[in-house]
Length: 241
Image 1 (tube, rainbow, N blue to C red):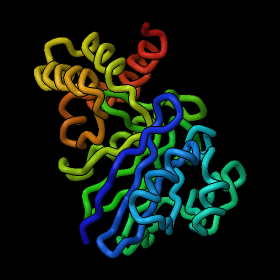
Image 2: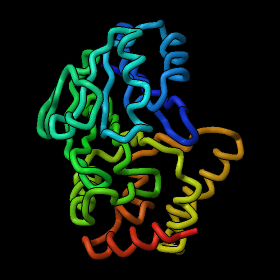
Image 3: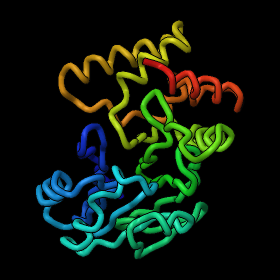
C-alpha cells in the first residue's frame, strides 16, 4: 500500500516525519514539539493513529504527551529505551515487524548516537525513519555509543535497497556537505549532491529525504571501510568548523 511521507520542520533544525496511508490513517515519527506537528496533522485530516520514536532525546519526543492526549495516538518505541522515553503503548525490539497504519515496518537496531536507538524500515514503501543515526552526508555524534556500534548500524542501513528514502531527524546537509568535501574532494557524486543542497537551501526547501543509494555514493560515513576510518572522520567532524 503506498504511503506518503512528508517532513514537518520543528524546533530550530529538526524534522518530524508525517506518514499518510490511502485510507486516511496517519503516523508521526519523532515529534520534537507539538504545535507545528498538530498543524500538519490537522491539515492532513485531523487524525493521528501512531507516534513512532527512534530515541529518547528531548528534541525528538518533546511533543509526544500533548499529541498523544489530543489525538489518542498510540506511542511506539524501543523496549531497551523505555525507561527514558515517554510512556509507551507498544514497546518493540530490533528484529520485530510491526503494523504501522496498515503497513509492515521492520524495527532495526541503530545504536551509536545513543544506546537503544532504533530505526523503522518500511520495505513495501521504501521508507526509512532513521532518527539521528544517518543524516544526509553525515551520521549522528557518538554521544553514548561507540564507533564500532555506529559502523555496524550504518552498514546495516547501507544494505537496504538503494531507492529507500532516508528520512532523518535534522537539516544538517549544508554543514555535512562542507565537511564531506574535505574527506573526499574528488568524489563526483558528493560534489553534485553538495551543489544540489546549495540550490535547495537557497530556495528554502528541505534537503531530505535523500536515498540509501545517494548516501552510499556520497556520504563519507557510509563509505568508511572499517571502524577505525569511521572513528577518525567522526572525530574530525566533531572538531570541524
